[in-house]
Amino acid sequence: MTLSGSQVNEGDVAPDFTVLDNDLNAVNLSTYDGQKKLISVVPSIDTGVCDQQTRKFNEEAAQEEGVVLTISADLPFAQKRWCAANGLDNVVTLSDHKDLSFGKKLWCSNG
Image (tube, rainbow, N blue to C red):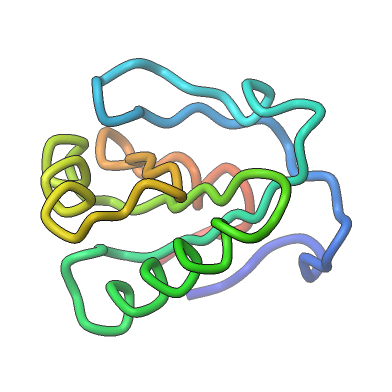
């Protein structure tokens, strides 16, 4: 995989993007304007490491201001099921399953 552009650092402004929420609504990054955002990107929340990462951010988000956006290639209904089954309600899960444009648009030129 070849990454394009500059390394992403804390405080960098991300370009707007569109993903789907758990109810299949299109959501843009700009939806969360005015809030601190932590964007957590995982291939699938149904895998061990991604599960742990999402759970950890859910715990941390309960104590912080702002919003944690977890973006994965999972289907929205799978994200909703996983959050309900695991009692997670402090992170917002968003899906890039439709065309994987989140990663392509932001930082990945191939792969």
